[in-house]
Length: 337
Image 1 (cartoon, one colour):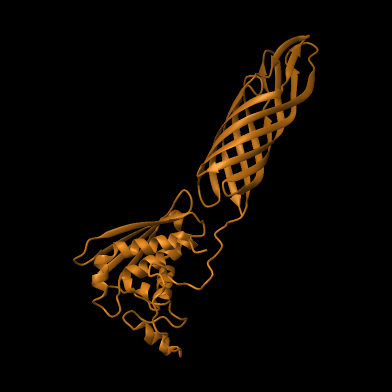
Image 2 (cartoon, rainbow, N blue to C red):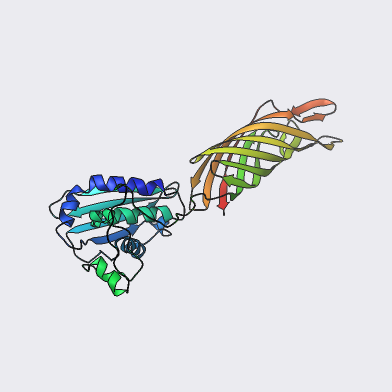
């Protein structure tokens, strides 16, 4: 299935390039100047040489020269998901133009194909009405495309109009857009209240699978023992965490089970013990991308214990797990493919 991004570019280019079409028709082989800029975090995306090659492959020649009436500047930047490219055009006696293309893919392949199509139509709008060139050497700027094909020893194919002039004919099979599942690894520092006596701190390590808008992870959580009313304790649990994601925001359920350890502090004949701990929770997550793999993760969590702990001193209850616990977390996550 062809990427919808390429089809949208074709439609927008035909509507937006009427002034450039008049200019291009005055030349047998339209040319332009090209400059490609990339932000520091978009260095993995295509550079100027790669974009020139993609456009030349579509037109059957390299249309870019050092000086021309038409100039094109492409600025590629990293987006929250994927990349975004801003294309600025300027021509002598014409109005400057700007359009924006975006792709959510991390490999920049869709964006490169869309840019190549947009720039091909910008330089030579009539190229939409010609069939794709056969493989052969790329001609210099200003040379006839058919001449380059003839030099390769291949007869020039007669031009044929596609059935639908708004669709570019391409027999090559497009790549599969599905990215498949990713391994999700997380490490989070916690500050919580109502999980252990007083305000406590803890660490959560997780591993799971992230696919499209969903993920599921297994987490191991431990709290530093804290003291309140001469007792000290902390839970140590394993949790299953299924989540749904929308852009950088996620909503998760948390199912936890494990043990609660406790002991008396600074009292005669103090003893320690372990009891069962089971809880359900809900979590809201914000994952801010740092690069293609890493993200800064912030979350807030509400926990309701089903089986809590009770710490006693001398037969008297000193502390028990509250009906609701709260936790705030900050950490990092990595999506590995």
